[in-house]
Length: 414
Ligand SMILES: Nc1nc2c(c(=O)[nH]1)N[C@H]1C(S)=C(S)[C@@H](COP(=O)(O)O)O[C@H]1N2
Ligand SMILES: [Mo]
Image (cartoon, rainbow, N blue to C red; front, side, top):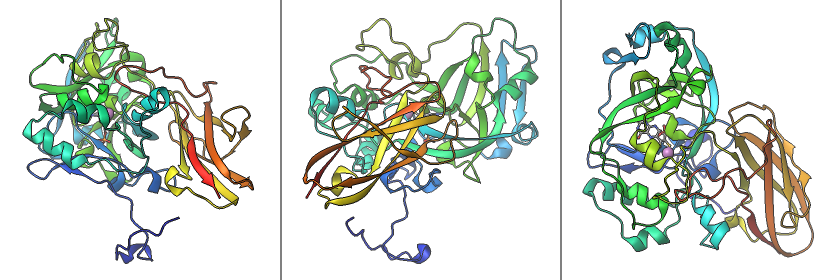
């Protein structure tokens, strides 16, 4: 392992160990508007708040003090009502540990595996500040920039969230028969950032309908809204929620990609027909192209797995024994198996799975690899979840969302 830069921070006992933190992008006022988690520097299961990735689609809203916050519950309910922070906290609570993953995380690996495009790095190298500045100026990146850059990695983290099941709030309002979804609205507003959408697709040659200035909102299908693990959270990792993560209260929708986890929630509307908010219609969708008449919304994630050690960047490695480590998770349940392969997938061997096996959290795994023969190796790993789903589950789609394919680590043994 290369020696890390000396930081001079003795909090951790020795100065050459870096504390994992996001590399933030900031807006004109200096507010953090995006950041990527240093995924390969994390140890354990929970991502510290300093290192948790951040994605904002619209403008960063002014912070709202919990005392000034109100949630309104309306629509197809018997008793519409407003709830303040104090009364929300009086409802029967629940904590959930789970992975937050942006739908576009690791999207560049689709192109690498399909078309031999440049392999993205898991080590955070994206200049989020440049993107933030382009956004502030309302500048669109050039077509060349968009088609040549490798798209998002490191937009994934895992945390412990404390709050109240959404169903507890809905029960008090009384859902009317015929309801199909709950529309959750954040108090952030803005014009959708078209640069983000062009970057996601990898080209600028299509029209994005302009919805004007909108609120961030998602219409959550009723079944998932009623799942007791879907919570309105006011705490993350033992602290009250940070503003950048949606304080005072955000939605936690375990297993479903980050875009469902509406931050800064101010309104819940129970509806008897499914609306199609901008992001649910144009961006967080599958489909063959922007013109595809059928663009189904993204929901549960596939089966995910990343090899965190060794990295391509660690190559070359000496002969001998090497620990291969990774983390696996799934949108539909706990991980029950991880296998590794060193012959391009012809034969597979079980890796060791670490406890705990939590339904929505990633699971650590490891394999002690003894290698005597010098040469080029592709280390592959594939995960299986408790519903029997094996990687990969998600076909290519034009927005390059929900990537869950097997990505080999390339190392040379000398
Ligand atoms: N109100 C609101 N909620 C939002 C967003 C947003 O722009 N506004 N972005 C979504 C997206 S795309 C992701 S990936 C997650 C990121 O959550 P985080 O910033 O707390 O990591 O929040 C989601 N919730
Ligand atoms: Mo996202």
